[in-house]
Picture 1 (tube, one colour):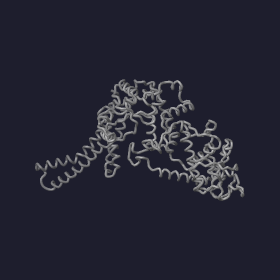
Picture 2: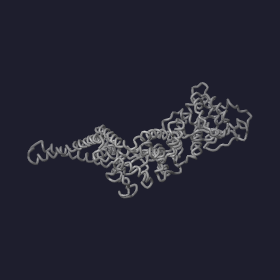
Picture 3: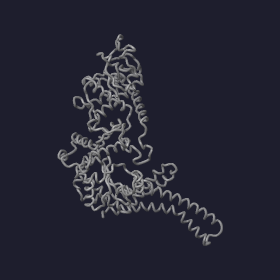
Picture 4: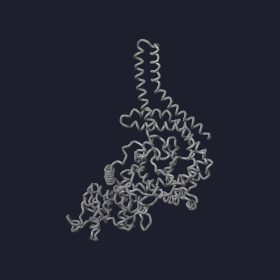
Length: 592
């Protein structure tokens, strides 16, 4: 037995003593009532006021027993939180199950009852043998306890939850080394005292959640009190269990585990960049990348190439990847990608017309280009709300001024006369349609034909550097985004209280300031103009997300010029950039 197992067991007994003391407190009035009734029956407590005292104590004891019984029933029956995962049957991954069982045999511990995948860079054991889980599974699948899986059987070993990025990025030997201390945790978990203490703590945690329901609010207070009383011992128990598992796993691939831990850190860095920079823009557009795990390999390959983080990187990729342990890695990748969208963004549980998958090859056209044009349309809608003339530069002090400092409009120009085909009002600029350039070669006629970049440049130009125009426009965009989010409605299950019912569990959308939103929208407008008039194309960078490609090369020098316009009101750096690229700001862009 490992040296840390007795320590973990002693902490588990301390947790169970808290439960015993709570039970004793609940039974104390009943014991006193029994003593009084027995004394009255034997004549030892005759005369007043003992009849009244006995009656009062019996009533109090009955109430305490009723409340304590209800509380105990809630703790025993409340469903502990279960991490949303993709279940992996043995038929879908026989080689992976064989690898895990071989690890358990080498360390002389019970094998996990099942394996599941999670879209995260972590692995752990999770107990799913609670009776509430069996009842929930029977309601979902309409089956008896038999076909629900071995993990739902009473006293079953915990489920091994594996981070899906590990399977695609790590080699088989690395995955085995990383999983060894996790699988070793089934040994201490099988100890009856440790399992009983864990069940008690999970029941209290579930009871706190039940206390948030109507009519059951009184349950949360005693549950929180008991959790506080056993918090230290429970934490020390888990540390002892982890230390015992690590000690048992030292004889299994210990040297390789040190190397594999470097890959764990690398996988986490690449997975975080892929979700926040690549997946999140697609999720916001109602699309979900169907192969995130395959994408993390490309992201980590690019990260290793840029930062030179991996020694012998090429030779390592020649080894067998852990995803070869799966029978159908593509289908499993798609399932974990959909779950990632639910956990990190709150998307629907199933694909639909407004929530469809997108392949990496189609990502630039179906996500990047659409994202840019949607933001450009929102930017021009905000300008319309501020009554900025379409195509003509305006200013916050005189938004309806007919004078254009860049291209003055000749008085006799037919495009400038009211009612002419070239004239376009603010409402025309907001139409989400494809707008063609005017037939006239005149730049002014082009400027008046639809939403143009010149309109944005003119409005944001503020040589005084006060930034009033940018603040006003940023406020409009922020308000419009808030209205769109309210119109979209809450995510499915957002009204639930815990677990998989509260989505997203880990939202990736950090709060963005109005200036950041304005800079994003101006950048999108510039990219649309470059695509429409300079032959640029939307592209995908595995670490930075949507990028602009010119002649097949990424242009990464746009952001500081946009910030110079948005924050300082100086358009000259951006105009020089546009001129060098051959972008015509006065030409209308295509919106969605």
